[in-house]
Amino acid sequence: DRSVDGEPVYRTPSELFGAVSPNDTPVFDEIFEKASVLVAGRVVLCPMAVGAHVDHQLCAHVGRRLQKAGQEVWFYPDAPYCFPDSGPKVRSDTSLLASRRLRARIWSNRAVEIDWQAKSELVAEYSSQIEELFGDLVSYQYLAEDYFHHIGGTLELYHQLRW
Image 1 (cartoon, rainbow, N blue to C red):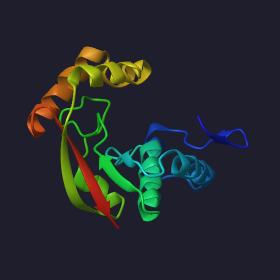
Image 2: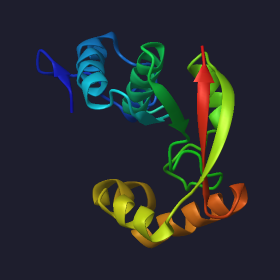
Image 3: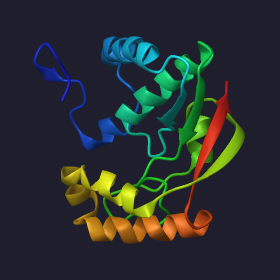
């Protein structure tokens, strides 16, 4: 939770899925400065802000700035927001709509084969979010499996964006 003068930057769920607050500019700058050192010369995988969560939007803007600085950046659709049937607590969204909110165009796509077991183990690390959004890990796995089979089996899609 971020705050300014003891007040939360985002007070309600609708604010968490709205516009990034100007109060987050120092957070953005800090993330960019640290990331630019850590990822120098590497391919960067970055959330695309599908679902419009402000933290994901901040990351997408950092990815944009890294790309502008010469990094190779690929953006991925954020789970669970990219799932067409994501459940009552999650607003479904698409890569196309996210790119429009970022004022970008999807320039190219890359499909990458994934290891389902490894992905499930990583997702399980976010237990508080799994419980809040899906109730349990098995429910997440069913939604993710349906989504990935819909887009090509064991493939995840990544996008390069242009502004």
